[in-house]
Length: 81
Image: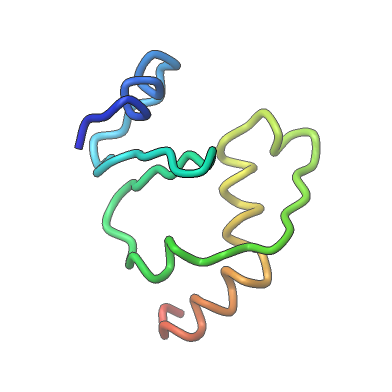
């Protein structure tokens, strides 16, 4: 899926062979990478505080998201451990 958002990501140098799409709805950029279950990717995180590193480093931001209480609960609920 190639749309305006994924083109924007490519202009920023963000490319991934398993990127299945990107969309922008209500000002929120959604990026799909790999084949993670949609129910996991649709997890709503009520509040996420990023430290200085995570604000500018994608790997640190992803780690903060993956370790959030909501994401951990969804991983358990989906039996992914």
